[in-house]
Image (cartoon, rainbow over all chains, first blue to last red; front, side, top):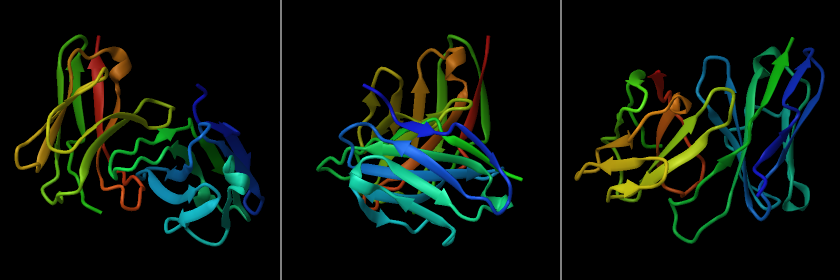
Length: 117
Length: 110
């Protein structure tokens, strides 16, 4: 079974440019999450999709970030325009939702390393 | 979100057992205790979880205190591949997000 995949693995862009990150979850996983770690900080939650719907986007830092999950399969996270403080590692995770809360396991991708110059 | 407290780091010798502690004194009755780890240059990886009883799986064991205010992740025989940051996370599933702290960095000496 293929795991969570993310593309690109690395991206280097200049301040003001646009970058789009892609995440392909494990097939059949309704839940899709985005997290990120900025330099020296802890991994922070960004948002959560259930199928194509945004369940929780409380962690999105500002309106320069736009996440989509058309058709409930893969997801994209667009940063426009990128700022220096957006540099970091962006992780995607997916999971199945079980009936009993608390036992959900999230499977993470390898991350996209974004550097904004 | 309920918080956990872990030491910053721990060292172990290869093939010896490792006990990674976690304090969660404000845990609620519905919180599950989850452990994830992050190997260098990889995404976090699920290790184990439990509610009240001790748990074993192929990767590790989880010992949970009777009052549930602390737990210990046990790696029975550390290998070099186990060198990673280990995160102890309280998880209700109510909003489904994982709240990562700083974790504990485990180093394994050959």
